[in-house]
Length: 272
Ligand SMILES: NC(=O)C1=CN([C@@H]2O[C@H](COP(=O)(O)OP(=O)(O)OC[C@H]3O[C@@H](n4cnc5c(N)ncnc54)[C@H](O)[C@@H]3O)[C@@H](O)[C@H]2O)C=CC1
Ligand SMILES: O=C(O)[C@@H]1CCC=N1
Image (cartoon, protein in one colour):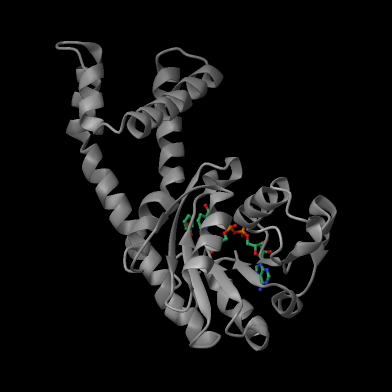
């Protein structure tokens, strides 16, 4: 489905490079992949051996344009590509907060625009990516967006755009929360005498194993928690401390704050 498409990336940083690696390892011919990056053109050419262009040239050549710059840079990029975008090109944004309607307002009202929210686990093809396609994208084109996002992990398709900020706050930002948990659990192990390296390996594998259980058994996490928590055992003593500290409230507040911030990123053109 993707092999004969001309795909261009604007911005090849943390996220753009994960997509690029995915496309290349899938065997997409390199002559069909282009990139534009304001600061790293030479490095990308050397690393991936693909055509490097400026934003306008890239948008003129590509049928699918993936915009992977920071939200603060997106409107500069849209200005650069405006004259090259017609009603056939497929624009895919991964920028936090930026609404399809605002992108269309900059480009053209009938532009085909998909707003997506992946996460950094794209680097190991374990992202979960939410996809919203505007009304100008056909079913077949939606399949193309899904195929591209599947290069970096799993996908969910949204019928409306409204929940995209909440998804940004939960699964877009979520790996950072998980890294904190892994590090914090490792700190606990170190406090109890474990070596740092062992403690990190143990806590990371715990999160991976627990996640696999939830996903594979399709069982509610509370039920799985009960499997670990023997009456009067060690786990309930640990959980007791977390409950006193209000761990659930902390996560709920964190995701609310990140959701609110994602919305703000879409409201101001001068985000940070
Ligand atoms: N890093 C993450 O975990 C996630 C990031 N995102 C979104 O992905 C987007 C990219 O994030 P990262 O890859 O982390 O950023 P990054 O800073 O690593 O990469 C952005 C790239 O864009 C280039 N760039 C900046 N201005 C440009 C311009 N005018 N024209 C062409 N290239 C330009 C930069 O040189 C840089 O290489 C952001 O909008 C962010 O909201 C979404 C989900 C997760
Ligand atoms: O913090 C950020 O701006 C981006 C959005 C999702 C993950 N990182």
